[in-house]
Length: 130
Image 1 (cartoon, rainbow, N blue to C red):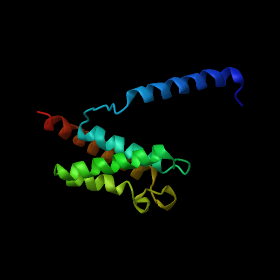
Image 2: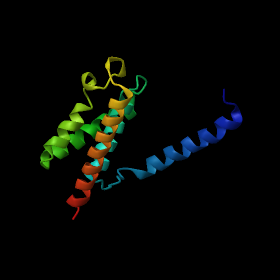
Image 3: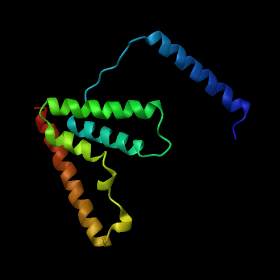
Image 4: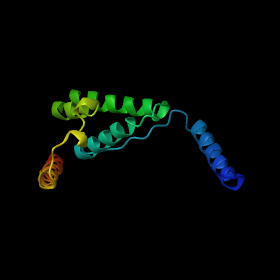
C-alpha cells in the first residue's frame, strides 16, 4: 500500500509528462533497427500482448506497430521475416512445456541449435549492412 509521500512525487511526474505531451503536438521520433533487433522488438511486444491485463490503449498501439512493421517488411520484400512475425500472433504455435516430451539432453541440444540459428541470423544482419 503506498502512502501520500510516495504518491505525490509520482503524481507530479505524471502531470509533468502530460504537460510535455501537450507541448509536443505532432512530434514524432524516428529510429533505425537492423532486422534482428526489429524481430526481437516485435517478439517482445507480442509476448507482452499475451498478458491478460494488457488490453488498453498501450496494447492497441503495440498491435498497430507490429502490424505496420509486418506490412513494411512485406513491401520491402522481407516476406520470411513478415511470416515469422505473423507466427507470433498464433497461440496454437506456442511451445507448451506440458505437452513436451523433452529430456534435459534434448532441451540442451535444442538450445544449442537455437543459439546457432540466432548467431547466424545476427551475422546475416551484419553482412546486410555492408
